[in-house]
Image (spheres, rainbow, N blue to C red):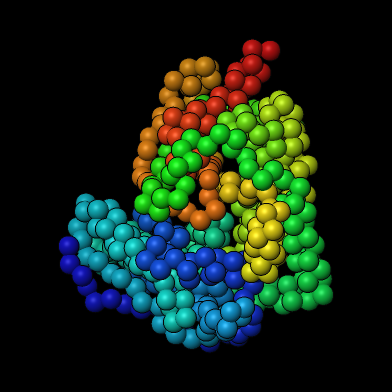
Length: 457
């Protein structure tokens, strides 16, 4: 493997401007700017085969169309004092590209190494655009493409939009044609709406909703923490567990159809019911990551739009089906209030905490699945009874993390080939590894057992 002369993507006469950052940009910038050396874990890396391989110039031209289409990809951020953040959309500039030359056979290995290099560095948001590009070429043709997004420039839903737009460009679309057929809300436009009287009313209503829910919720969810003596130990590690379930990938849709709700509501209802059973609290709260892409123009945006909703479910321990059915209406109210000025909200929540008037809101749920991608896009759907699929569930422990502020338990839903993943990171002071396994398998079992019962009708 050799390193060839690195090219650049030159941007000229693109849309430009500056203005206040959006609520979503402010929220994630406030997080990553405080993380220091730990900031790269918020980067969004992806490594793709280029099939069939394409000339280097063609790949660079495709990527330039993406820059022209999405302002967020050539945006920098300038902080002003304690409460100000400006987004600066550059109309011109160069995006550096890391180029590696390798044999076609070794291209995947070289690409994986390049991904690690590009994703392992923090972004300088004041000087650097929120996208890094790497190419692995052989004989003048690009075989692998590496993209690393900064979280200030996109969230996971935005990354999915970016990849779909890349496919469209590779098929012949241009920034102009995509913009005409599918207008996308640009961050400067979103910031204008948020600063309007309507935007200010939405922000105030959302923060009022949060304060009301936090004031009404339980002060402590886990009644009997696993090892409270560890709570003050900064050296403790948060275990990370990953449950991969082919059965869950099949069962969740069947249960959703039976209950007349979305599969997202089934999953959130299941983890809420399981949290109630595991914690001994009949009332649970989750900070739920919401894509906030309810309008077509927002759905077409590559930007950081996602924020957290505060989901509070009472009587969550009563019955699984009841929990799922009520999740739909409770989530709807919570999601309506998932866009706000987080810095202003944080100040209000800090005041509640100081007065010991805030509920325990250290439990997180993030359904990262892309609606456009299913577990069975690349593998065949299994034609066997669910009872047989349950034996194929795998549980492993990929890593451990440093302590995370205001995190007792964080659970993510992810799409995998032929399976649905539940990933869980937890504070060992709150729940043990054994408890984590029971939690994940319990949530899976709630859904799969219901689907098996439906099969037998």
